[in-house]
Image (cartoon, rainbow, N blue to C red; front, side):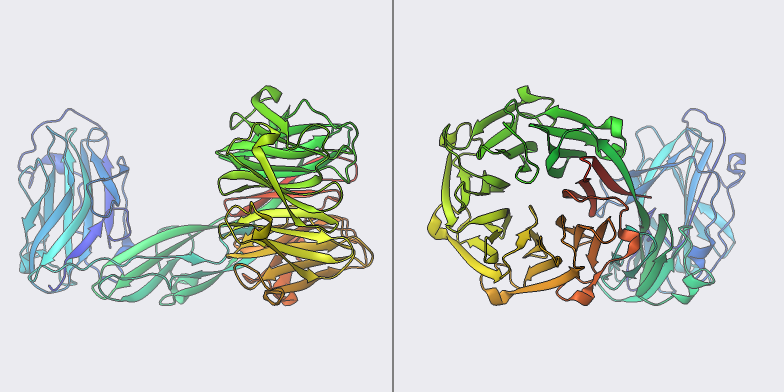
Length: 638
């Protein structure tokens, strides 16, 4: 035997695991010699001797009164098997471990036996065809092995651990030591899935190529496609045997389990499982106040969806547990500010919502007055104006601008906005918790007439995408982490279209590079995608502008997002009167052929007046306002 073979309960390293219990219970007492003990009635004989290739496909389970719990003393912290005879007079587990035909030294059992309890270990004696029981044990350790007696004709070692009469024990792992004492470390299985969850039907690649073996090589890949724990069954599982890459179809909504088992050149195995999910869109109306709605923002905060919206002249924060987002009555809306807009125009109303230390903060424009307000909540779930502090970001009477986009920059809140006379301004608080207008400073980034800025932090520096009246779309970045000096900022022209209008909050960092969506308000309408090939995007030649939609009708709303790590754009299509989710099949989305507009991804709703989103567990949650000032949400469900 040239290596140490390891088997671990419930971690995929056991080639055969048999569990059973028999009903009843009693108080703990000493365990006597058990070769002919009537209490062993129901304990099976030696497991059927099988080759290492087939032994795991013949696992037999009895009544399981055991529980599984982590064993902190184990080197690799696997799940462990707890044998509890307090639930049954007899509780036991059998392992069948392939060891080959080399000479063996000893078996080591890692685990624990509570004080005052005892356990029994039995080794399979293949010369007599019977179990060979140890004396009662108060702790696990090492047992000597006899290769001729304890190794079967097929090269397996059989070991059982038993508890009787109310005793209990926790078994962590079993190790078999060969003559040279070396250790065969088990392989580490790894499943790489292109799309784990998606709108059904969909197809995805599942790869085991990233699986590794720390002291050898992987010689075998096996698959379980039905979740029954049995690998390489006749049919598609058998056909997949030996291949590291699989293409799986998810035909409908629901869970579709997938299992992988890898075997190394020393016979050790590793198993892992995952679940593919087929999803569908489900929508719900959550607010219909009869007022004009605008300034829509959405984010996820520790399992809660939080949504900022202007309803008539006031600002509100909507909150709901993530699992109840589609239940209209579960949403709670509370007022953010006691300062209302003197008038209201949905075309010029803006809110921007972020989290600072887990608490919502909002920057908003008082419509027509061109006054920007900043409000910060004192708790993660504010219930009304008393839970917010608010102030003007400039002295009273100063009209500083609108179209704000808020972000956390260098540990302090910052926002980009359109100045009252048109310039692009960048405001940055001088402290993490600004309380008055004196806690803000600002610089001019662009002196032109600028609109619709979108501020984001990427690569430890702020960046802004915006459009300049009559010139088109521009991109600005700072040389420093704070951007507090006008000299820190550099702007570059990307695309020249006087009617270009970048969707608000569209700038994102995806795959380490800046990306954003562009939509044109004029006819013919176009929806475009801009991506830099470099992390900074400091040269116009770094950028590629891809036209995705050219319907001849003006695009009215769009929002840049990601879906399974790839770029996507939610937009309202006037031609179909639906919300469309354009998705790239590549991680870059640099070419029109990368993008797909599939009917199954679309939402049959008229989200023409604003779209917001957040990403939860890699999947988008959408909110939108329709032309009748009704607020709806959509979430992917099974």
